[in-house]
Length: 308
Length: 252
Ligand SMILES: Cc1cc2nc3c(=O)[nH]c(=O)nc-3n(C[C@H](O)[C@H](O)[C@H](O)COP(=O)(O)OP(=O)(O)OC[C@H]3O[C@@H](n4cnc5c(N)ncnc54)[C@H](O)[C@@H]3O)c2cc1C
Ligand SMILES: Cc1cc2nc3c(=O)[nH]c(=O)nc-3n(C[C@H](O)[C@H](O)[C@H](O)COP(=O)(O)O)c2cc1C
Ligand code: FES
Image 1: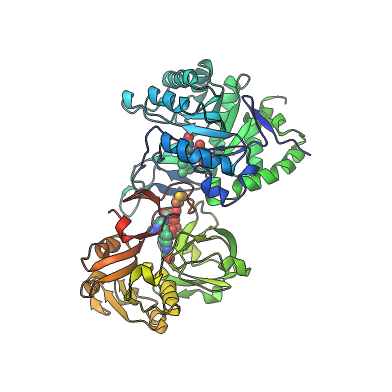
Image 2: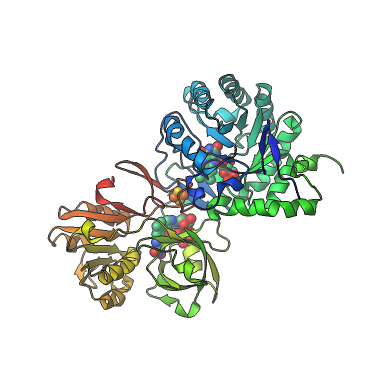
């Protein structure tokens, strides 16, 4: 028997597989597809203080081995999530839940995190810093170490739960951002979010997405994610755990992400093409561990950094 | 929703116009075709080498088969209609709400209004309404006679059919709205390009109806909110809350 359990800042997951934020809603749709209790955890849709209708259509474009999305953080707002989704999640899933939160100001980040203090099933806060700062001309919080540190400080002061900062890959040196978050007390990191991209329609000669740009995800981004997890593990891997995310679509990909330094693995776009992707990955993990000669999957974390 | 395997029967792939095809998919087991439970639902088809599935309306279905009408729009649909014989397709079936054709919803004289490839789900709808003892009529629009298809099939169902073409090469010259506006007050069941839906929705004699929408989709089963449009009572997912929406809830 392979032990698939992993630990993230003191929270035990029965396996390392976590559906990624924005590809799993608040669990309702996937609960019709498989029993959510097979999952280690899941990360719910990025939630803001106020309800957001999201961007205009079209919001989705296909790319080679992936997709662009410009959903625009559509969500029902924290109030509705606490009232309607949190009690419903308790009926669908018994494990620990990861709450993905966003904000457009430091105050909003802090407030959103504080409001989750009493939500028992939420065991980890995943703070998406790929959001525009309305007080800084719309510059992303995740785009420089100072503002990433400022968000970390604000949420760390407000939250009673482990805080994982979700890093943007649209930066020159992601390790610098990781260090800044760790220094301000981040309990862990999650990476990567989507890579900024765009497509142009040859017929109309206009951008395909109404929002002009969108976030790239899917198998196309996997090597980028592995490299960034590697870099961040080198920088802070001894101090805090990393959730690896980006392009994972098989148990082998998950193992590779763990060897690069991830303690757990999020799966996003893969579930949109194949709704049973997470289930299949979990089922395949024991055999992959056996092939790699480990009896505890957690032994894979950072494995590629050590030895010959 | 159900994940199904269908065999694309090559000898039953039929070219209808220069860019539109009829495909018959055979189910490997009876539960697969039974995943479809209302006209107006769609399937989402995985294609080799394409990351996202392609949503296609169910035109008709039986115990062991699905009939789809596919218009070549881009690479994916071009590939789909040219797949090698007996290709196995990975299909998510039973997606979307479909049309509600209960007689009490629509009164005695419902009109099916289709434009171009949008006529596909109306065929299965017409068939089931007729089986149900209802008496729909159909108004179908195409660009020209050469672009028209499935008219014999609709006629064979035995319902009153009016055709409009933009260039007048077949039936009434003009749009479906040119035919519709001459009719008494009516309830419509419509599917076609957005400008057509909007024009039909705006006709004063269209007193009620259901309109089937399209949107670019990632999942097709409600999880990603990629396909959301704004409706009178808030954001709605075309794939899960639709694709069919009632006249009253639609905002343009
Ligand atoms: C609910 C629904 C039912 C549909 N029913 C039919 C049908 O019965 N017959 C038919 O021929 N077509 C139908 N379509 C449209 C069909 O899905 C697109 O023509 C097809 O996805 C285009 O793919 P492509 O690779 O050929 O084109 P490309 O333009 O190369 O596709 C690129 C991407 O854009 C998406 N896309 C492109 N056009 C559309 C579109 N109009 N709607 C949604 N996504 C699009 C594709 O899925 C793909 O992800 C339907 C669409 C929806 C949403
Ligand atoms: C449709 C869609 C919506 C997303 N929404 C969010 C979100 O609300 N918050 C967030 O932190 N990440 C969001 N993401 C990013 C994913 O969680 C993930 O970081 C990214 O897609 C890379 O992983 P993947 O390649 O496995 O999809 C979204 C991704 C997709 C495809
Ligand atoms: S396409 Fe994902 S919610 Fe509709």
